[in-house]
Amino acid sequence: MRPTTISTVPLRQLSAGLRGPRSTSFPSSLAPRLPNASPTLAWSAPAGAAPRRPLSTSPAPKAAGSTFVKATIALSLVGISSYLFGSLYPPQMLKLIFKPATPPRLRSDGPEAEAHTREIEDALHSLAIVKQLKSSSVAHGSAAELEVLRSQGKHITDVDESTTVEVPANGRIPGANVAVSGPPVEGGAADTHQYVMTRPYLKYSREKAQHNLTAGSLRGPGMVAVPPLVFTKTGVGAEQLGGAEGDSTILLHLGRSVCGHDGIVHGGMLATVCDEALARTAMYNLPGKIGVTARLEIDYRKPTMAHQFIVLQTELVEKKGRKAVVKGTLKDVDGQLLLECRAIFVEPKYARYFLDAKGIKQAIEG
Image 1 (cartoon, one colour):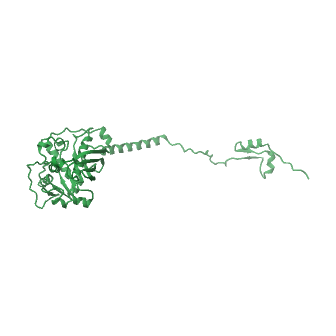
Image 2 (spheres, rainbow, N blue to C red; image 1 turned 90 degrees about the horizontal axis):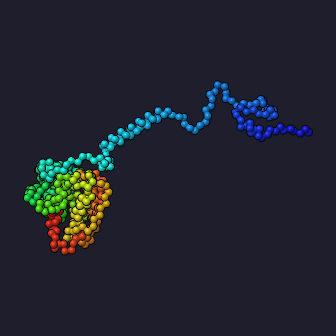
Image 3 (cartoon, helix red, strand yellow; image 1 turned 120 degrees about the vertical axis):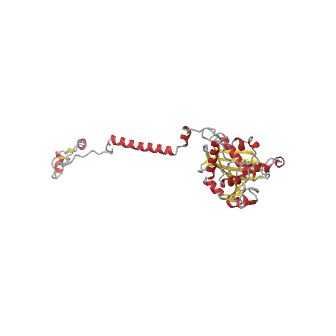
């Protein structure tokens, strides 16, 4: 039997042929083993076919001009929108950097000051929160007198001890319930309402007011143009709404002349306002209805801008013997929190013997 002869090709030669170009030639010794095959095989594209594009993961290049135009249009739209929005609703920081021109302070007397005061008083009574609270309140003392005068078309924003007003017998006028006589919170007409509405310090004598910080020194155009509007919760209100008798909601307008930094109300002014508001709630819950500040804490959350109405709400936290703890919040009319406060008030020993608690309370309530 004749041995079989196998023709071999060196591996180096074969591998070199495989690594070569697409047109590959096989050795002639291997040709007989490939049926109907010519000694040379060539890999080529069919005639008339388009040449193949090299494989690539990179996107096709874009025209530089098109991208630049789109970016320019987008930036222009963003800039125009930001300018319009900033013009209508300027950010707080821009208000501080680019402050609007502040008008000169008005004199405490004269037609301009009187018109300014009436404007603020009318704006105060047009606030939604004031209308809501007045519907469940009874106006007492000087607040009742002012309400009667307003119902008669007399926009008087100040009264004194010589002011006499005839109050309707039924205690009702358009937009308010009034009760001139009787204790403001306990007994009388106040017991049928959730709140009693008062205007502090209106009946303070002018001799005392000129030496008093809040009743005299801070009163006037540009500062506290009109007295605060105070809604104090009655016993009925505490039962129906929760909380404690003496909890209050106070509305006050602060002008442009009580600032530290231009346009921002001074922190010390806000501390004074908070101290008196918290003290009013404490006095309703202390045995002798009088107390002094032992501790006052304030957390300033945001700047309080001048020439706006603020809403200060107080709430009794604890009362124990001669001590009362009260907390409160100060917000703008839109509900934005401006500060939080908390205070401890103590009734001095033997205060009932040398302090006129009734007179102080009457002065505070107006």
